Image 1 (cartoon, one colour):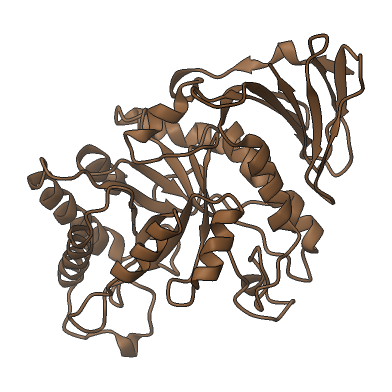
Image 2 (cartoon, rainbow, N blue to C red):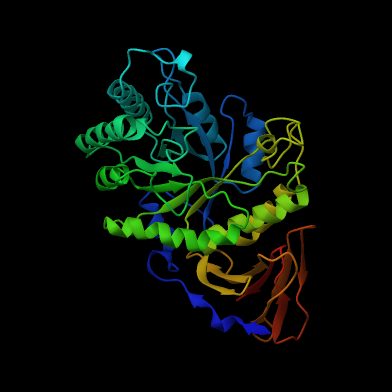
Length: 418
């Protein structure tokens, strides 16, 4: 059954039509309904690649750093200047070092205690945070503390929590200077926002003292399930009276390794990943990642890139670029879910040169299903856009009172101009 667009659910609270400005006080600036970032390798990224990233529509890039083996911290001044020239903003993740990282025992000092590790990490984090004054930097403390690969469970209460206490206390004393927009902690087990421990002290101390919001890594088979998980996760923020804080998706992507999917499957999922981020009311998503890390098509970890290991563009990149082009200078006005079919309605942001509304429809099902009927005014300019397998725009049927679309796994959009 075709469903009229008038049945859309209006977006409320911090997700209302003015949401773009609401997130700016936390350092999240975007021309889109959700800010868009991509993961890079900071030691290998070239100026040509940065230009291609900007041309594709990305606004941020994410990379990480960790405590150095020597006393000299890594210097990103040159890279940050290159990002500024490329008109890209950084998301910098502060990873843990050898004593709290899951490293072989031979690499760990036998005399260092968990509190020594906490001191080391807090010194590293504060030194790095204070080294760069750029207010456009979004900082992320840690990476997946609920994943034993990145934090030995026994080091949570005895190492990471004391480190965060030290960092928060130091930042509290620095109030009055330039604001640091800090997100924690790259949780990997959405909807949980805490490792499995007797209490949630990690969030309690950080939300109270020094976080601008939380960050999550919502990897999943079906992108649309993010909305329910995000709603459950926000309940914990409300528990601490911090329900207004943003929750960003700082790492999320889809690999096209042989056993899972081809490039076409990756392209559809990346498009739905971005749209599901908007649907869930998450103000920023970082797509993992820009370039494949190796040529082995059978290796999952080597094939998350939007370009392959030689730099050749994969199918997801032009599809995403075309989608971003249609959504630029818009903000979320309403959303609807009917069974496995979804619709977003986006209106022009204040000050946009072209006044328009964009209706994006898609489905989480493998085959086209639920339909949407989008009414239009007589004589109103109307364009239908496709994003995969090809990118293109065509005029709507002349004289028709509405545009009828069946939602499928490849999203489509209808743009109505005032």
